Length: 172
Image (cartoon, rainbow, N blue to C red; front, side, top):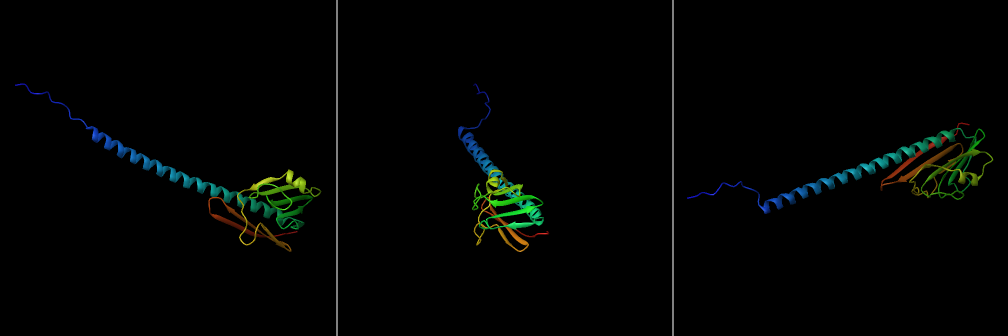
């Protein structure tokens, strides 16, 4: 009597398919987790960049305003114009009365005291983005009286409000 040769045992088709499905589920879950973490990281990075840019714009405006000889907010109080040592500075939100630009962007112009609004519109420099209307205050980022100006920035990038506010006193 002849005996059969001993064959190696192997996986059945069902076992291979089950292991393939389990592997695919693990990979899909890992990939989804990676994308969720990456998305959260990107939103936090964008928010931090927005905060840094907004604070920088606020500090620059405050520093220049402190040295101002005089200021003017007569253009609907949507812009601030002041003179410092023969130079004129304008700051405005994009949709202010006399200025142009993106309505959610804050702009700056530096020129001579003889420069007008057309010069400011043509030579504007973007200071910061994603500015939104202020709660209860509409578009007015400047509230000035006497030698003091209250400056308020409100930004909204990822559904999270960020309000920066400072009070600046002219030193001249």
